[in-house]
Image (tube, rainbow, N blue to C red; front, side):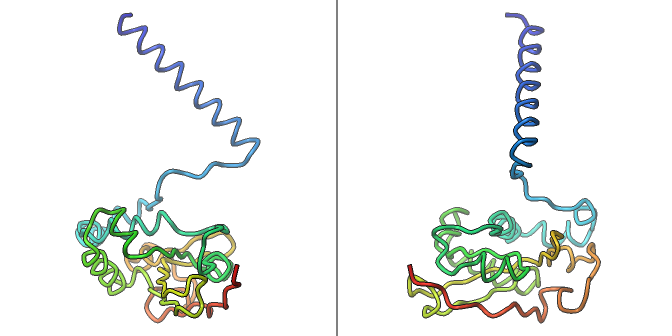
Amino acid sequence: MDTNEIIQNIRQQQRERFVKRYFSEEKEGPTRSPYVPVSFALIDNQDFRNGLMAKPRFRTYLFLRRRVIRGSLPKDRIDVFENYWISGELAVSVTLEKLSERLQLPKSTVGDHIRQLEQDKVIVVDKIPAARAWDNREHQVFILGTCHEGEERWFLDEVFGVAAKADSKIGSAEGFKHHPVRSVRTP
């Protein structure tokens, strides 16, 4: 098989995958993107590029952002979907142990990253007492932004001034107060 045949075969396979994906999206709606969207305005911001983006804690932020809960999950111990997403908040609950394992970092480093991200005002950490969780353990919920009428606003964008502030309540993580967490049903 010569080089031209190999290239033609690759192009044919790419066309087939594209057509298959296109028709499946028509029937089932758009598929979830495997990418974490970061705006060009944010990437073009020199303070962001030379600041947070260059710091090790940025990968922890991206990991959290990738796992924002936008639907009901069967093993969600504190009902993040009902208590946060429905209230218009982009949130995720992951234990520090799980973050440490997935990021292959020591737990103390992950804890430092979370504290630094909170100080940077790109996340808000909400501590859920053990009495309100199904498993009777304390949990942390990381709030990364808000979502109103399908428009997601990330605190990160607002901190670096690349997103318009809708009002003082949504403006940034500084002073951000979420809706109170409702008690969780016991399974």
